Image (cartoon, rainbow, N blue to C red):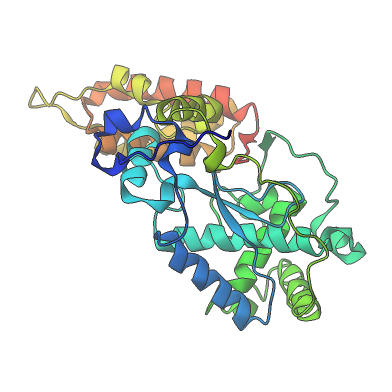
Length: 339
């Protein structure tokens, strides 16, 4: 006889108690959650473009479109404010935590889903514009921040990660209401990709998908047996340096949470004051790209603000050493991929 899991009234529990619950036992659903109207908005945007195929959505451990499957996985934390709060506490950010950012990610994943549903990646023109779909997904990619061959949609120049991501990002820009992509990208080589998608979607708008999801979607929250705490421990480990708080311990060795002397001031203010000198000297002696070092310094400034760290003028020496060390470890290897 199949066992029935006991329903847990978890909304009344403390955060510490929530972390000990298995994810499947939360019994989460998109229905009547904050996600439901956003998915409805997405489907309305597709209807406005004449696209009749609406990719099904399910709750997963992260944003994804399983390889080759026209279905969208959405992080389970987005269905309830308590789980968003836990995500923020444990990961220091909630990917897709605002309506605007959630819609951007939904449009991106829809690009993947349509690509798989109609097997668009097999088309010769698709390969000419975006590259070979068969390219291996690497754990890292090295982007050209100011390249006009790619649209700008998600952060980290994500269109440059893989031809499949390039298509999904271009589709997301094309789908976004009131963006006026023809005007915005008219002088960019990326306009060819946008016009291609415009003509392609008109062709397939009323056609039934060539492929639908025939199996249980992977990494479904409804089947996750790990506790919430174990899930976050694993997630932080996988992210490594990409975890927002990865450098917190090192920053607290350079600076302090104590505003204990008249000469101490906000660490973020010290870093901003010396940002140009740090940028010029670190790039001069390491050969790293200014863009990468600039982004790293800004990331550390934001963490200093979040941690409310203080320091003295002479602490800039330790900060420069820390930033140089991080840059050496981080940029000798290409930037890690989101997926």
